[in-house]
Image 1 (cartoon, one colour):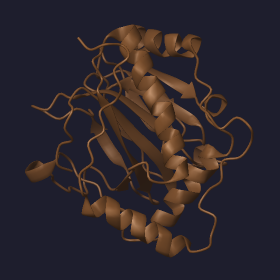
Image 2 (image 1 turned 180 degrees about the vertical axis):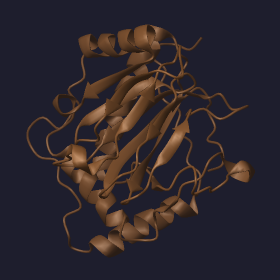
Image 3 (image 1 turned 135 degrees about the vertical axis):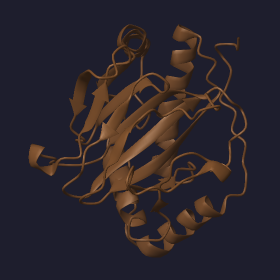
Image 4 (image 1 turned 120 degrees about the vertical axis):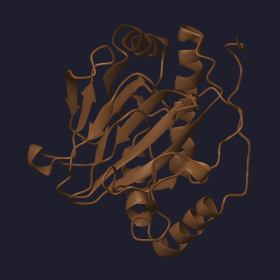
Length: 253
């Protein structure tokens, strides 16, 4: 068991995908404002009571829906949305697959989104990472999960894109423990589709939630236990997927 005060382990590896994303973000943005987080309070507003709610939700139901704007610095959601919209114009976002490393399979009959991994190099990403780190530490203190680090990527679903029912953990690599998905879409209506459909951890045939991907909405769930799927989007849909992990060394992407 790891100490409650352990800091997340961050191991830097040269990654051409991340480097390309950073370079192309700068090239495409040019003088365009990538995102500004303003106001006196630019730190995540995360307290012990809220972290208690997260731990209770995971313990009781294995998943929960969250409203994150009150917990995030002002302007952060807009900055992240602007950043992924810029990346979406470049080759930095690649077709997502299933699995990792040599086992990676890109099957468009299962998922059709495009992704770009976050590395924390930009100011919006750095502030988001501060929030995720506080969640990691808080869940460790309350649930003794042994979470050592987290990883996150942007995801873009263009009209018609989807992700069929799945679990977030990979067979033989049960290191993803808790998943968090944050949505970045303003003015998202029912007619726009793209909802996250959540199934019961106890009865995989039972639908227990359907979350509209509105800006600031988030879903937190146990990666190995909660099946879920992304319904077909009818307009471009942006999100950030994050996984809190028990392993120390990043696996090949």
